[in-house]
Length: 334
Ligand code: KG4
Image 1 (tube, rainbow, N blue to C red):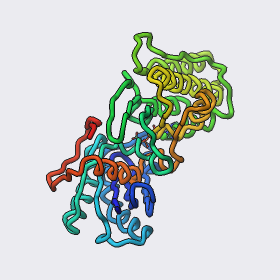
Image 2: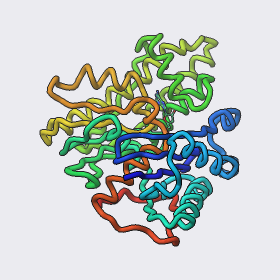
Image 3: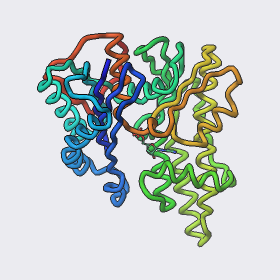
Image 4: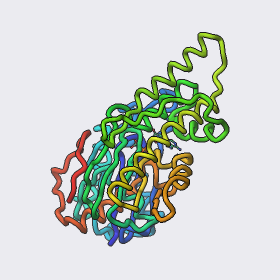
């Protein structure tokens, strides 16, 4: 089964062609990072405009790379939400146009389901599992007893992890998106600032990162006021240690409580080397920890095609051409 995936929820225009939910024949990504870098974050209007410029070219390139024809596609899977509405609409309308022209079935896919299913490309997803979803807009612990069965067990009460990474990077003058830079510098420093670890003593599996973010901002301001230098490498290491400790320990605590040994990590922040190292160091030997390779961690259409494949297998209901984008969309089980 050949699935055409389309993703445009934020600042990546991506089209992929994936065979049987596994074999990635093409995964073309046009990133706008360079365009938004000078603004220190994604500017929604500019993002939508660039999706419009790129979408047709990215479609054409995906078919060229995959070496298949539009007629060969069996299903179109497109990110329906959540995301920036203007950006989502570009991919969604391109996908609907394709589906109409070639008379192909189309389904809307949840962006976070895409991140979770990025793991199915290189690993076998074994159930029951716990997914730690960490991205620029989300931080969630999700229990899955089977394909497309999502139960949100914990979530952030304030900032998402990626958002905190980007803010901390900005405070110490690193470019956008800051996560990869903080991760790189963290490996050159040590945890000398001992920032707070926020575990929330309410018995929940929720997270909170705004206090940690404020602690970094206050620390940097205080050092500046005293004319002292910030050791950026140490600050990155201290921040990363605090974040990864909480993420890994809470995930393992939940896994232990429910006696679940399959853990998958998903979303842009799953590209973080410190997070991977800590999981591998702290998880018991018999745990199965899956993290996608970096090219599938951040936004891409291959993950949407794979999620679409499993969604369709679970529930073959297809959409009609009234399918619409949704900026805030709940992750729903099928
Ligand atoms: O999943 P994603 O591509 O976009 C969505 O938010 O949906 O995630 C982007 C986020 C950004 O905040 C970026 O800074 C962060 O993922 N990120 C990282 C790393 N690579 C990307 N954060 C920490 N360490 C990394 N290596």
